[in-house]
Image (cartoon, rainbow, N blue to C red):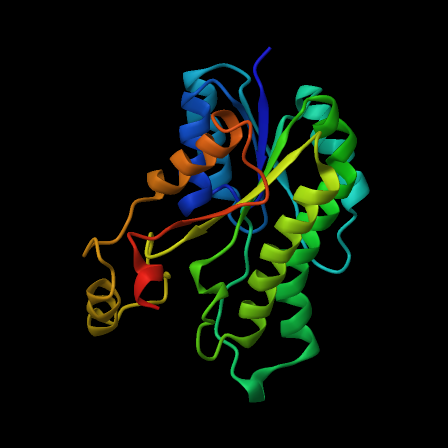
Length: 243
């Protein structure tokens, strides 16, 4: 029986590339989505054409009303097992200090920290049984933080702390690691050519990365590194050297 991975927010961008790459390595895939139903259904169709009954999708909204216990039960029913949890879903947008509200705080924190923690809690027994692995998608801007992204910065710093905490708490049964993307895909609302060139000028590799770079790193942590836990790998072309 194939191993099974769940990728939160896996319908588009890095999540979708990760789904495709892991699927090519004979891992069956569960994808959660919120608004990207068309993309999720298309990805499911394409993966199942390549290998029958190898991909399922699950609509989940990671807000204050999320029922993580039921969500985890539903997820486990899909294939009858789970080996890997990839916490990819993320809320990312600028928040200046005068824009800080309870609504923005809850929206970001619920997705970026609470969801990875509570999914880890409710999927723990299954992952322990499989000697499974958790990978959290963090961000190279945990330190130093991005200007005018105060809540986002807090959420990703918290996710790094959660990664290290869970690595301690869940060992030796489950390994927990993080992957921090650099300039892999430009934000969808980023159109400034000058800003892009400025970012590229600070990357030793002098180019942006590819979503496959993230997918391959995730696969390495899941399948090829049985003695690595509690680590955060920066996939950034060396950008951290110039921050």
